[in-house]
Length: 179
Image 1: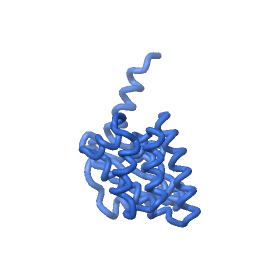
Image 2: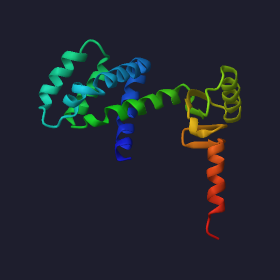
Image 3: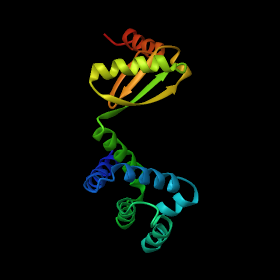
């Protein structure tokens, strides 16, 4: 939670700089690329290792990303190293992506169902939600065979569980609630 809050502060500052220079999407792409490069394996171990000298990390990162990513993204990366907050990189990138979506007037929407919904079913469901909430959504579809049937919708911090498994669980809680 504290890391998420701190990552949101960094992301907000980076987003403000990117907005000033009109490079919001480029910075988002660069942060995603950096996270995927440093997200696992030896590169990740090197990046987050507290025993590696900061100047050495900065040198390697400058050699690796210098000229390949926007200066704002590069200096954000270097700032995390200087402040010993390398572990925030993935959370910062995720928070930045949320700010990008919000700037476009969109919100993340996850639709979970027992089977993959057809394009028409998904379009109809999303269209109805967009009209109901007066928002645009960036949709992620997830298949969860344990849902049995129905759909579960996650919009930001709102959850609508219309799955058979969710309804059975709610019924179970009601039946076994202490009077």
